[in-house]
Image (cartoon, rainbow, N blue to C red; front, side, top):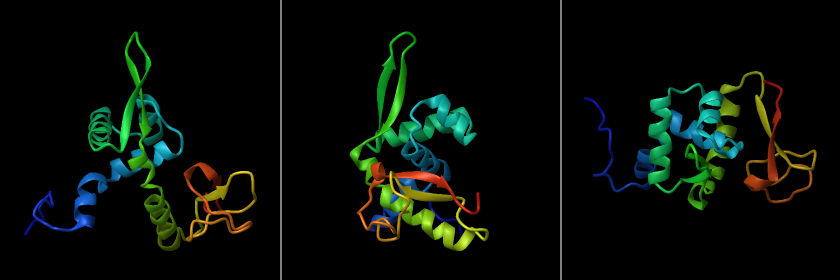
Length: 149
């Protein structure tokens, strides 16, 4: 028996959230946005995703209020895609998923370490810096090559 593709009948916040972000390409678009990618062609270059799939995911993320389109050029009209507050709220989820993947699927160590910007420390599972103890959020960190890079 096949699982349904939507979860409208389930009174479950996990199921409802997965309806929006439970797709590989959607999560990778959000990850790239946290890394500073904003333009369609740059998302496509970084991800290697088909244009129609990327268009679909960006449209859905905008429709859901996770990202917004911001014009940066008039002729021809071009837009950047930026995370909204709702999108930025996905950061702890993304970091938890990254740490879980590092523990279970990175036998040579993490390919990327989330470092504390301006400090030699790194993000802990409590969202603090392991060196100075400061609480960390998405604007406080930077990706650094890890041992599994």
